[in-house]
Image (tube, rainbow, N blue to C red; front, side, top):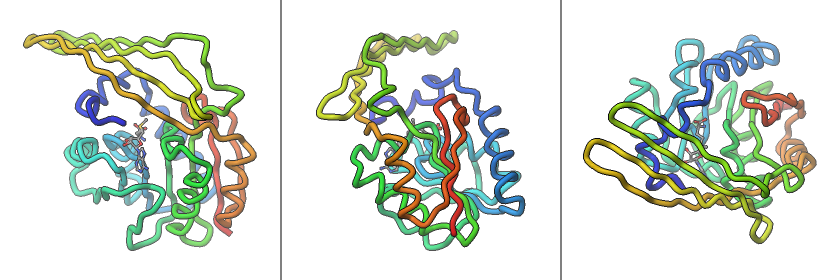
Length: 232
Ligand SMILES: C[S@@+](CC[C@H](N)C(=O)[O-])C[C@H]1O[C@@H](n2cnc3c(N)ncnc32)[C@H](O)[C@@H]1O
């Protein structure tokens, strides 16, 4: 889903305040588990959360996109990154905290995969450990009535990306158009992002079935809410 846009990922999401997100994430971890020391960020993308947390926690990252992981490895020297699917992985160890941020969980698409991913993440937690997931929209809150456009503008790289949202077969579908420009030329490409639309009840049930006591923060790190599961 980020096959063509991976190399532009950081420019595309330049507006996202990772500093504020990492600060709030750290405060949340401290509140629920003051002694937490190790953290696995699943669907870590280019590793921006890890970069900001790696001096406070022993961090590792996981993602299924090799190009994004290459950027993450350069950004976070010495950190182990695992190329794997978050619905089914074995990191070979457990952590105090597992995260899945910026709505990445919805890329698993189906309810069955949601439950599988949450179970797999929970299996990687020590007793008392935390699973922290920022959800995507639900069927009731997903926008299908507007167009979204974002712009990145520097001297040598300019990007405009734009999409409308549709619901197809119960999934949210973003057909994203990217226009990228460098001094060497201007290119247009599209990417189709398909994300599952899970309800609050489904997230809670997935956490409970994975042996996690669930808490909810309605603001989360990026205004989309946040589920915090504490392993029994
Ligand atoms: C919106 S990006 C978020 C990246 C990062 N968490 C951030 O906040 O910048 C979604 C990420 O989910 C990853 N992803 C999607 N499906 C995945 C899966 N099944 N297993 C692992 N990573 C996945 C993508 O490769 C991408 O890096």
